[in-house]
Every structure is written in C-alpha cells, then in structure tokens.
Amino acid sequence: MNPVDRKLWLASITDRYVRGGMDRRTFLRSAAKLGLGVGALGAMSHLSARSGLGLISPAAAQENIQWPEDMSNWLKEAGKPFAGQTVRLATESTPPSNAINSALKGYFTEMTGINVEIETLPLEQVLQKLTLDVASGLGTYDLYYLDQSWMAAFSGDVIDPREKYESDKNLAMPGYNIDDFLPALVDGISMYDGVMVGVPYDIPIFIQMYRRDLYEELGLKPAETMAQYLSNAQAIQQAKGPEIFGTTGQMKSGHYSLECDWTCWLWSHGGSIFGPDKTFTGNDEAGLEAMNYWIELKKNMPAAVDSWTWDGQGQSVAQGIAGQLISWGEFFPSWDAPGGSNVVGLMEATVPPKANSLRTVEQTGFGEIPGVGHQGGSSLAVSKYAKSPDAAWLFAQWATAPETQVWITVLGGGTGPTRQSAYDDPRVKANAKPGIAGTTRHLDAVRETIANHMGSEPDLPEWAEISNDTIPVELGRFFAGEYDSPKAAMDAIKTKVDGIVAG
Image (cartoon, rainbow, N blue to C red):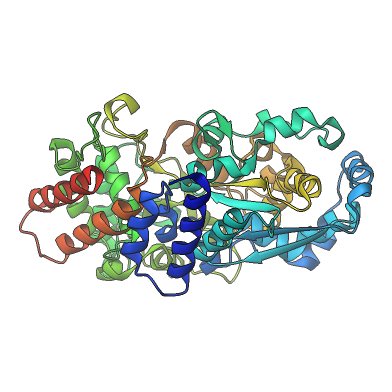
C-alpha cells in the first residue's frame, strides 16, 4: 500500500470506529496493520478530563500573571506579520491544554494578534481529526496533539522543531532553549527514528504517594523496597481496616488501567513484557513472582478495585479510604485543593520503591524500558499541512515556553512540567506547601522519577491490541477466578500475545 492510500485507509477506519461502525478490537487490529500505535485510546493518557485538573480560573490568571517584558515585546514584534490569522488545535483534555484554553491563550492573542481555537475532545476523536486532516492534506489543524504511541505513524506529517528553530531565526523565541526539556522525555515521547516529531507537552507518571498522618501514627516510613511497600499496606490494613485500606488499585477487567498496574509490579520484580527474541516473557519466573506479589497486595485493597479505572482509584484516596498507592502523579494536586477531598494537606509524595531488579533494554524486546515509574506522555507538533504554520510555531513555542509552563503549574494546572527550569523556578517551589490549589509538593518526586525510575512500554504496532484488550482481559479473568493459577493465566496470555505478534 503506498503512503497516500495508507493515510486514506487509516483515516477511514478511524472515522468508522469513532462513529460506531467498527468495534474496538477490529479497529485496534486494523490500525496495528497500518503501523499506528493507539494504546493511549484506552489509556490514561491524562486524567484531567475526569478530575478537573488543568482548569485555571481566568480571574486567578488575570490577578497573578505578568509576562516578562522581553518575552512580551518579542512576541508583539514577531507576531505582526500573522496578526488576524487563526491557529487551530484538536487536543485531549490534558492539564496544559485545559489551562491554556481556559485562561491563558488570551494573553498570546493580545501579544501577537493571532487567534487560537482549541477543540478539547476524547482521545479517539482527536485521533479521528488528526488522521482525516493528514489524509486530506487540507490543513484544518495547524497543530497536532500527539500521544507518544502515535509518533511513528505521523512523523512524516509534522515539522521537526529543532530544524524549524535553527532555520528561521526570525521566529526563534529568545530563551526558548530546546535543550531545557528533560532529556528522558525528549527521547521517550518526542523522538522517532532520529526525528524530533514535536516538543514535550505533558507527562503523567507513576510515583509513590501516602497518608502522612497514618504513617506517623503507625510508625511507618515511605517504602524503599517493594517488600516494604507491601508491609506498609498490610500494617495500615490491619490497624485501620475496613474503614481505611492499605492501598488501592485501577484494576477494571479489560481496561488499559489494569495493564498499567501490572507493568509496575512486573518491572519492579525483574520481569519484562517481551524478551530479546520478541516473545512474551510475563510467564517466566520473574513474571510469576510479580503476580504472587500483586495477589498479596490486592488483599489490602477495596473489593471495588475490580471495577475501577484510574478515576475510581484517585477518588478512593480523595474519599480517605486508602492509605498509600503507586500511581499517576497528576492525582496529587486535586487532593490538596481546599474542599476537593477528605485528605487536604495529608498526602505526601516520593519516588517509587526501588525495584528488586531491573532488566536492561537489551534484555527486553521492541524498545521496552523496565521501570517502576510507568509513564505516558504527549508532544505538540506543527503540521506540514498547516494553513498558518509560522503562527502555529509561535504558539507552540509560547505554549511550551518556560514561563508558560510555570504559570500552568502554579495556578492549579496539575501537570508535571516537561522542562527542567520549570521545576527549579522559585514560583513553582513557593507553591510546594499543603492545602492550596496548584500545590507543587509532589514535583520533586515526579522529576526524580522521570530521571531515575521511568518505565516505558514496548513500541510495536500490535501493542494497542495487546495492552488494551489481550492482557487486561485475561488479567481480569484471572482475578475473577477463571484461571486456577497465575501460571495458567500468564501462559494463556503468552499464547495469545505471541500469536498476535507473529500473525
């Protein structure tokens, strides 16, 4: 199939899926055959659509924000040739997108004269809009929100930001500094085959979070090992159950959230999803050790975890019925917002426990990177078909500039910044205190986890079906009692996964 036909067919099946004309499994398989990773369609990619993260009060923005004079003056001058143009973006409801759309984009328009239209949509509809736009080449959207799993499919349809920044100095924002983006994120969510597809935009990642009051009362310390994490859960459960459980989960059968939890326990026990021969290895000794650990850990969770995705997991903490968890750091600010939870000011954040052992990338397959801090992420890219590419590039720089990232973070955005400088900014550090909207108390843990504990799933077209359907369905069957042992479940998954990869 030539590239043009491939794009048209990809657009066709995506449109059919979104309109209800194709079931999920057929869509995942069809997309995989065309090289599109769509794992995030069942994923978190972000929680903000459900939890309200990233919604900044326009009044708060008006009261607090003052843009640096040199940045403002440059944008006014650089934007003059494009005044009156409109930049369009379709995006999932992420913390940066929500913050920019709800309160910040007006500043950009005021400084440049460039209008900005942002459509906030469910992720599958973002993919629909993107594929139709790429297939038609009409340039309906100037900017693309790209989940990390889409990089390969759309790497040829966007402008490399490094090349753009170096080739057009008149439009290169002073102090933008592409090297300021955290290196692990550039490699993990923005690069494909030596091409920088977009600039790092957002980064949800697993960190360790716990109730300080419970830990102090019971004499517990944040877990440094996986054994200690289980022991802490058991201690909380024994002392406080059933009103408060030792931990919580996102274990809904057939949902990607269940697969996310599984990878954390698998990787932390020295296992991997694939081996160097590109066959499934979750049923080996390390994989079974991880399953046995998980079984013990689950005894200290509410029974309802079998019906929860990340939404239920986050709410269980907010309601005060869970003492600790290893999960998405984006939860944290919502728990600290006054009136937003029953644990305001009580939660603490730190890095995940150290893995018992970790396989290297060379010991896995398809570029899998084992790490306790399971990550997801996205980039912002300028479309090659954009009607206003230069205006879009100005907006992309402004939206991911150090100053903008700071304001998204401190005004309640709930995001993990993608720039080193944002973590070190005094205004961000000043918000590292309990009981305020937009708390940044968790960000040191987020940054260290990105640098030293980050885990990334394998990169293969079939991963969408495997991670969204095969693995979580069979894991759900195991926890429902349909398999008589972890080995039987893992052996069944191996048969299915190896068949999908081979077929």
